[in-house]
Picture (cartoon, rainbow, N blue to C red):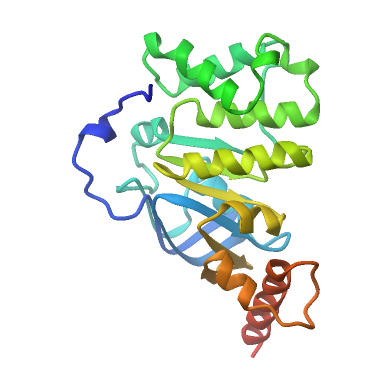
Length: 266
């Protein structure tokens, strides 16, 4: 049973789960996100871009790990800015960073329980929430294994479990399929489709085919700016026959990114 939260019973006064206007974010002294606009609601949204495009910095900002340097950002209808009270927002967020920290001596169950506690899940709901999260990522057989004993792919699945244990209204996954084998990636795509029925999911990945198979729409960024938005079908249709890539979606990605770069230097 899904944990009931205040957001479930209070009137929804926002249109977009994630909304950014002219957003700027710094990674150290470097301005990694530069005037980005974004409006995302319920569904599975793919975030694509070359290395250094600003994807991870954007995800960290949306997860409230770092603050915006400028512009406007709202999550679940609440403004995020310096001095904002973020506790309520964080209860309804799930986040898997590229490299997530964990206690090696914790079991998988203990680790996911700990995150559920951090998310202020009611104590009586934690055991059931943890069991569901572990089962959804296919780790029930390893629930009582130490985190330090897991393979890279299993660690990634444990990271996904902690991100979804609180049934988040906004779920942010940064390179979630790293280390997963082909069968696990197929299972993960099915999980994304299920979660996207009720939540806003943003998935950052280099694997264009994962986006094509699981996402309802695509956001491409380049040098911290929105370069293109559309559906996976529109991205595939945009590809030139001469563009590099082994599939229509990959050729579409290469074509769209190339056109944006050409326009940017004019």
